[in-house]
Length: 257
Image (cartoon, rainbow, N blue to C red; front, side, top):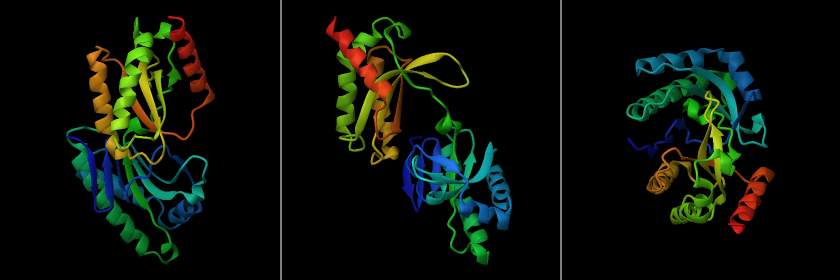
């Protein structure tokens, strides 16, 4: 089941469901003054009820915590106070089950907050995520000897242009791409590194449209029989020095062919 739904103040994308609609990734978590106030008044009752609601839908939470979710470079007190839940994602069942869990939990949270005079100015969102959202991929620019024979050269001479053409065809990425890099990544907890394509886009790019884009890129990749090459899109505002250096090395290599 493809996930790209916006309905009545809830947003649903693969691995994430939230009410009110989701903030763009990446996000940091922290303790804010509002979190402390809610905890002082309600204790762990919100987390406990979230676990009960999830269990009624056959979902066992990996955890639930009250945090502030904020954009890197901002601060916890400027973020969104959020009841953050984690669970394993199943493509066939999670979109429907998670939507109901988030809706029911949000209703309970709103009622609990409204009943407390000390919390009338506090708004608490509800977000449910899968471990894939926070997994540390550890992307690093790929070197020729780390990849299958011929992949590095063919990527820079042939495939990279095709990937950029796909990105230019979609509103979510047209004019918003910061970098398209051939990388290796560590898919924790496995220590082995695998090849991947890292696409970094500005925060104005809509995450809900990414599955269609990655799917089209993956179909292009399969034409080259590179099934092991994963595609990862993330919000980012500037390329780092290490990626700039990778681009320079790739250009030098190709120029010497």
